[in-house]
Each structure stands twice: as structure tokens, then as C-alpha cells.
Length: 494
Ligand code: GLN
Image (cartoon, rainbow, N blue to C red; front, side, top):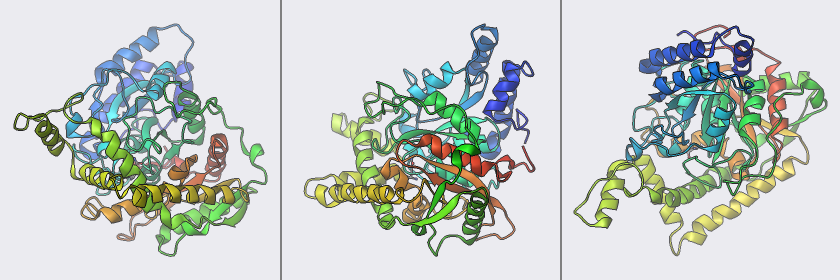
């Protein structure tokens, strides 16, 4: 597979374009060709927007305005982020053909920075899933081994960046949907502090958890991307009144004597052996660079999965009520009554996992059960948040594996929802606590089912509330200790 931009990250590509070493049109066209050539094997994209991308590239080349921080950089957009005039179908039959009438703030900010969106990426339907297999349009595949899942729900965005089809893609992370596929595909995935990136124009799943989150191939690109998409937005009532994080890494100097907390609950005995070894080796490299490793505890970690799957499904059952055949997407007429039209539309339009979530969430909120389920989950969420607050009294960041295993084979868990939910066991806690967390490339390991293979492992670095810069700096420090982030599925350094 040919990388269309010779392994440059977004920063490097923008610099090469601004230095006149390559044209925007030429870069965009090479990128579109590579995406088209990859589709049969990887299935990362739901739509490839050749026409609008080339028109925009031409417009950027002709313009004599000052080039933006992402001038000419091709980017991909997850199918649950509104992008004006383009199909935003959330990988659902129900929204097939629905074109967004406006752009999400994050998409608008990418455009204002000079980026060139080239297509809309595959995902688990309505962002519900951990493998990409819940897409109504077929799964995306892991570029390191196309018989395996890339992770989810932002499957296509992770694949697009891992296969070096684009240097930057947007996803959304509710309980791990950017960090987990980033880990399984060997790239960076960053979930900002809740409220740091506007949710305006993101199709809501669990509104108290959802964050627009980027995939990139270097720590400096995390800083660059967050400086573009971050910052207050009056159109999102949960947006924090904080400026966007800074655009550049300050480097190692800022990190002398950093305390890295290692929570024992996130290194459980059943953790996959290769994943443990890769993460421990990454921690040892941080220690060599002067970090101090301290053991910390998140005593309520075992509550995280049940709490998340009550909170997220309750919010989803309410958010997805709007998809009833009236205002958006497909409609199926029932027997002529309004209620039967609602029922027929939803029965035909939603896939099994979405229906399962709506049922669980509706039950958790129903009269007589609300306090027992939603109420208890809310109280458990407070305990999880307090665990982090106590841990951060002893350390500056927390490090743990992002995923308990490397990528598993397609089809392995589709019949067993609970084993699928357990893929998120290490990511949902930071989501429930609203904290910033990155998955950074941390080496490779053999999957338990095939000792001959070598697949990417991610280390998750979580920071205190609003300390996004710190998390990104530590990712930069880890990056400087190895060349793991430069390895690509097609072999060798990018
Ligand atoms: N895999 C988790 C779920 O299925 C997380 C999804 C997400 O972050 N959007 O809910």
C-alpha cells in the first residue's frame, strides 16, 4: 500500500506544502487515489468526497490568504460529525442518505485552519461498539492484519490514520471509541477533558460522556490538532470557558521529576501477557527519562463497566428518540397510524446493538427502576471521579494499558455482547470522570490466539481535569523513547 504523503505527519505535511515542496492539489489527489485503492481491503470510508476535496484544494492553492495551521492537510471525518452538505449517516440504515445542513464546530475549525476533508469514515452504528462490526455498511479492517478488528467505534478513522491514508482524522469518544481503536491500530488517539472540544454538530450518543477526539501519528500533531479544534464554543452549553490547548510541545524540560501513577487495578492478573510486557517496558523507558513511577489505586475500578453501560444507554435511549422517521433520514410507513410509522421506521432502521442499548437505557430510566439503576450509576460515577482525585494527589499522570488485549479476530465476539463490552474496561473510567486521556503507541505483542503475529499495543495516559497539555507533553516524552509511532502496517518506518 502506498502512503500518499511519504509518512509525513500533519505538521510535516503542512510545512512541506508551505515550503513549496508539494502542492495542495497533488497531495489531495494522491490521498484520494490511495483511499480508493484501499477500500476493498480496509473499508475505512463510507464516502469518498473527491469532487469537494479537489475543489477545496484548488481554492486553497489560488488563495493568497495567510496559510492556516493545517494548510492543505487531508483529513477524514467520522460519520457522526455533521459536515455541511455531506452524508452524516452514523453508519446506520436509518440515516442513510441524510446530508448535514451545517458543520460541527470541530469540522468548521478544521476547515478554517486550511484542512481538506477527503471523506467520511466508517464506524459502529451510532458509535455503539468496540470493534467496528456494528456498522450497517460492513466492518472496517485492521491494516496490521485484515482478518482482525480495528477497534471501535471510530473504526474507519483509526484505520485511515494507521494505514497513512490521511495524517489526521476526527472520531468521537464516549467510553473509549478513539483511544481503544488507536491502541489496536498503533496510532495516537486523544480524548480531551469533557468540554474542551465543542460537541456542537456531533450526533449525540451519551451527552455527558461524548467528546470529539482526534487520531494522529505524532505527539506534536496532538498539540497542533487540539489547538485548532479546542476552545470555548457558545453553541455547546457544556463547553468549558478555557482557551484551546497550546499548539506546540514544550519538550522534556517541562517534565523533570514527573510522577507517573500506576494503578494496580488496571494491571489485573488476567491482562494479556504481551500487552502487560509492552506497557511495562514503556513505563521503564519513562523511568529512564527521569519520571518517578508510583503505585496508585482506583478502588472502584470494578464499577466502571456496569456504571458506564447504564449511564451511556440511559442517555442514548433519550438521544435516539428523535430518529422516528419524521425529521431525519429514512421512513417506513406502518399501517397508516403515526405510532406504527414510528415503530416500523425504528424496527427497520436500527441494528441489533442500537436496539439493545435503547431497551436497556429505557428500562434503566423507567418509573420504579430509575433510582435503582440510573441513580446508583450516578452515585458510582461520583466514587470513580473521587478515586482519580485521590490518585492525583500522589501523581501527575496515570499510565495503564488502553485495551486489555491486542486486536481480536473479526467475528470473535459478535455473539457475546458482554465480552465485547469488556474491551472498554480500561477506557470508560476516564470518560465517566470527564478526564483527558491519550492512547499512545507503546510497542507490539502477539495475540493470544496466534504467537506468530505482532500487533500494536497502546499505553493510556490520563491527566487531571483540564490538564490536557500535560497529557500531550507526556505522550511526547514517551514518543522520544522509541520509534514505535513510526512503524506502519506496510512495514518499516513511515
Ligand atoms: N465501546 C463503547 C460502547 O460501545 C464506547 C463507545 C464510544 O466511545 N462511542 O459504548
